Image 1 (tube, rainbow, N blue to C red):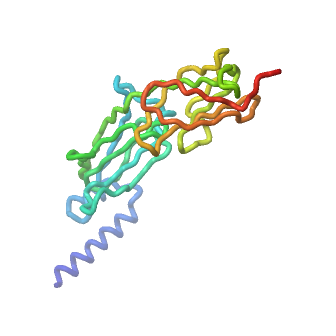
Image 2 (tube, rainbow, N blue to C red):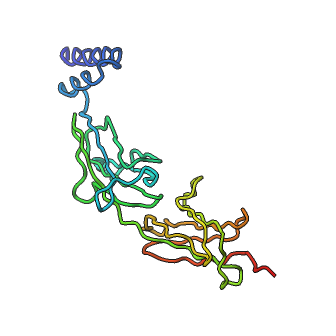
Image 3 (cartoon, rainbow, N blue to C red):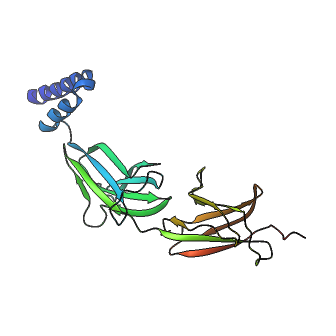
Length: 230
């Protein structure tokens, strides 16, 4: 009984003193507590998001990460996210455990690591570095027509957003004399909940709108409210 009381008092004292000097001695203090069994081991996990050719994605493409703790017996637990993100992201001071990460590009699921039988193990004092190679992007071209459905509409502005509808579009461009936009490269959709919104503006007014999923290269026709001049 006396040993138990002394151990509790010692634990409290160490935690208190460590708190007082946390700014200067946090790494050493945590390492000491981990070694003597008073603090669960903690580590870090860095995620790199790359194309299939091994190049890092641009900062404007990676929407976010979601981190799941797979150590919980009752099932996977969503523990952390980061929106918006960058193609290189570091989670620090993670509890010892088994993790899985999902990455989203253009708001669409683009890849993961740690699912199935191989979760990412994060141990005390360790930094794990994991690369996620995304699903290849696909091409989208929009062809805009007048109300009659056959006459191309040149000079229209086309904006493409996701189902999340952020303030700025993922892609935008103007139609040419044939009513066609440039080719846009976007992350493909992978579920019924994922889709792109295509908005058409003419003379600063919204004249056309459609929603589409994108699983392969395609051309999307849009009939607008613009009538042919008399």
